[in-house]
Image (cartoon, rainbow, N blue to C red; front, side, top):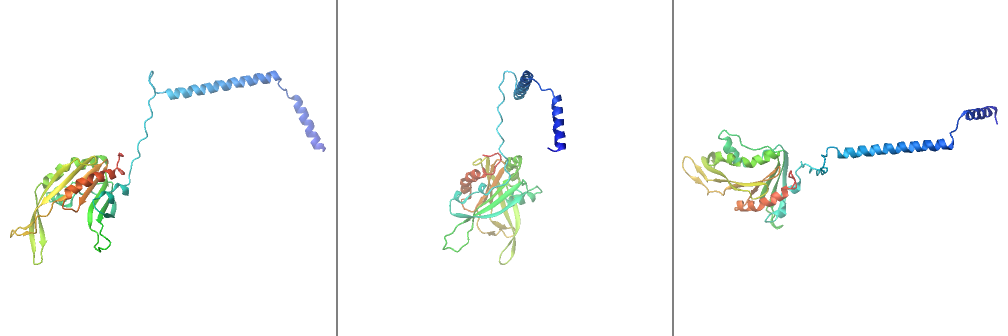
Length: 283
């Protein structure tokens, strides 16, 4: 062994000789004291945990049950919230139009023009999101004629109170247009005529689908020359639009059919069922 290693070993022996080692009884006593301290600490922790759980519970009452988690708020308008081809009474295919932000819920352009011609606002509510589509008639493969529109649908998401206001304001909205004389220019092959058309707007049906539903009808006369009294064409069929609400969503439905009102009453419940995929609160 080298001299420096020998010197190190001698120092360790001297240091150990000065150390006092506890006897067996003292070691066991220390172990018992540490065990009692651990038991006391664990008991305190359990007491505190029990006090936390009971905090806020009145004496003699059971703890309140946990509240169910709130349903997530829906924002986008999914495609399956729109009418599907199988909802219609004839073969169709879907031609999607566009989505939008901040679009007006424009019930009918003529109704808006009637109001603004009298110095009123058009009365349209503003949506947060919108999606529209046209369902086109499907012709046999041998028919080369392009499909024409069968159903036009606009679906809007609004603030909940605004969606409800669309319906609570309907009567006031159409009242100024219960009988409105529209004067326009009509071009024919030989000349231009100044003609008048009398429009009569009314809310004709309510409450047949969703949370709210209504049908608006515009019955109007054939165009009549204001100077000669000549009438152009026969009395046209009325314009009708169905308005359906489910939660914070509102849908406008238009049908290209002679029996439009009956078709809209048939279609509106199917539209309301589809709108459940987008509505807040969920159906």
